[in-house]
Image (tube, rainbow over all chains, first blue to last red; front, side, top):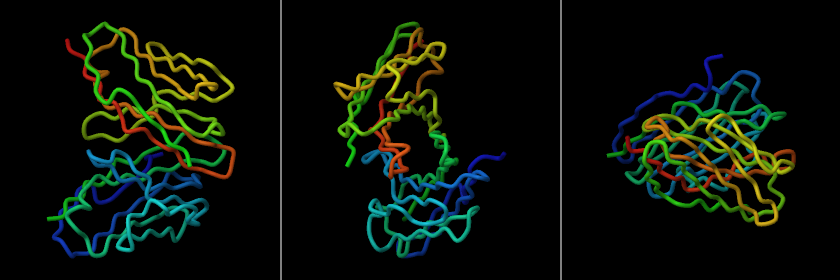
Length: 113
Length: 114
């Protein structure tokens, strides 16, 4: 298996633009997680899905952030409009419900100018 | 909800020495405690984990101990090597219950000096 796949790996955009981050979980995994990592706040859980259904989105910073999981093999995290304070590395992770190990993707480094 | 505190935030040791990182958690219902290693510019990767029915677990130079009564767990790295330099994260979760997510500590930056 190729592991968790994220795209793009790097994104540079200007304030006010829409940004869409993409994630493909490991095949067969039924949990998917979106994290944001910054020096100041560490690794923060934004939202997670179970069987494509959002379970907990309490970590989503504000209405500018939205996430979807239209099927078991694809999820998106959208920021609209983006702001400089959104600059961070965004990780997607997945796991299979009957096991404990959570696997992280390579991350997307987002820079908002 | 669960809260995980991790100490120290930075740790510098000489090659060959031992390193210990400590975490405390708040929710006594937590039953799964993984440790992740993140090298610079890379993704977090699981290095060892422990469940609440076990007090200690070892894997070569790495060991984790759990004290359920005190609600704290620790990562021990012996005979440290320069390649152990990274940020280490502890986490806690109530797997098997209604929650599926991990709560992470803030991380410890370990530097191993040759």
